[in-house]
Image (cartoon, rainbow, N blue to C red; front, side, top):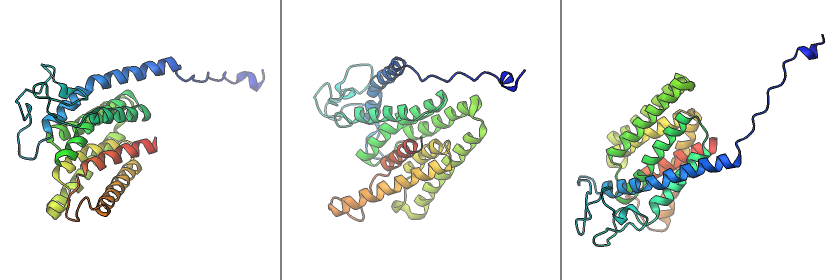
Length: 265
């Protein structure tokens, strides 16, 4: 018997998923996105209030309640109150466009089901957080803490399933370390440093990027600070802001995290 006959037969090549199956998965995700955008718009409408004020539960002009128990156009792209037709919450179409960008990110970044669930959870929290921070320079605890806790919990599921404890421990260390670094600037520099809301958002961002490795975290921070610096310089040259102005940092932190994930996949 020759040596060639002793060799095991080659394994069959894995065939890529059929286009029809890929299209069905995309349609399922798109349907889930369209079903979830009213909740995202409701979160923006409730929490986009100045610091120290209570959450918005009704239209500020006519008092029509904001909620899912009755139809109100502010849950849709028009963003108008059902009672007086006043604008409520985020501008028309912004939540939907941000949600589409989040869906594109989720489709582009590969991973196990638990890893995708962690990314999807963070993106669902990041969309209203970015819009709220742009509107009122505020990152509410009711979104930042669940964002970080959900990411760590779902990555814990991924670690128990197949990934092992090393990526999860790295995610915890990255999240806690980044949050402490941001909080330290608040204590040392006061209003010139990052806010505590930025530190709480950094907890989830650090965990999200730390799961994929320290280089991904470093890249995310580089993109974040580069975008922030370029935007500040452009606004200064256009005389839209002054040197003493304080730009919201949450959007840059979220965009930097998404960019790092897309550039390293």
